[in-house]
Length: 381
Ligand code: SAH
Ligand code: SF4
Image (cartoon, rainbow, N blue to C red; front, side):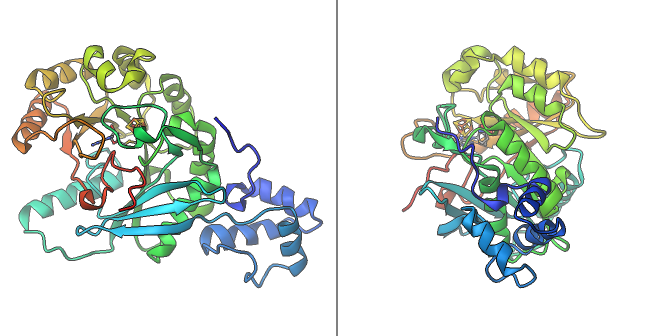
């Protein structure tokens, strides 16, 4: 797979790298802070209008072939529920999708962090009052892509149909967040934002770039690590590496099946790392105080949604500090599964809850615009 080892966008530069750049160009180190402030905090897509930077530095940076590297928003689709799906384009013509979900989808409910508490509170209040449809801006979740397409080939996922084109650079991952924050004019000091790395691609197959993007989001953009969650289809060795990171998002693992027989059929990657290896990695994962690991479980009608499957999951996950997010299958063209009845989803949930596993049902967001889990495939019309 072609990899972009030379990164031409300033959004991929750490503060140290920016400092090296400006000093190599003959300018004092403090200019690096100003460049970082302009691109990561003020969300400028060009240095041209940044008045506190000397013209000479700006033209030298341009002569180096470097640009800020903001993605272009090619298209925007807005759902009746307020969710927005963006088609974001990069310099080489490739594109990915990024999703803005006002009030989130309850994916973080009860995960042991403040973001999880907020979702629990909202779940409780939603159950009390009928939904007004009123848009609030107090809280939102941004769903970010990590690769152009995906190589993992899960049979229920639309992104899989694209195959993988290439990895995103750190700046392309950070750029998606900044472009969405800018489009919604978000003030990070006042509004509570969450990031989920659950868009197109397998983040742990683009591990270095993904982790660098995380560090840039924490150090330069100012996102707390406790407000980010990464989901992996189960790249077991990377789960081990991820546990050793000093700064890291929360971890979600797409389990999706109780055993190898079912998981191999829907997630061929199971032949490389089976359910037992995945559960062992989860069991050994070092969690922070109060943190819970999340298992994602897509319910496919008649495939993995039977009561006995729930009991098997509960048995095998016993003793792991975890919660479960159930996602009813989101349909799309080219994918031959069906959504289970809501009663079946509820039954699955109550079996897990009865076995002592906190279990939540993710609410689908933006299904009408193909923005829900597994639906990202650059659907233009
Ligand atoms: N590649 C990573 C992250 C992106 S997918 C991963 O697979 O974990 C985010 C979640 O959407 C995963 O839990 C995946 O299992 C789920 N998903 C994929 N296709 C889906 C579909 N059609 N309906 C519902 N969920 C789906
Ligand atoms: Fe890739 Fe995740 Fe889709 Fe599987 S579910 S194909 S890992 S994006």
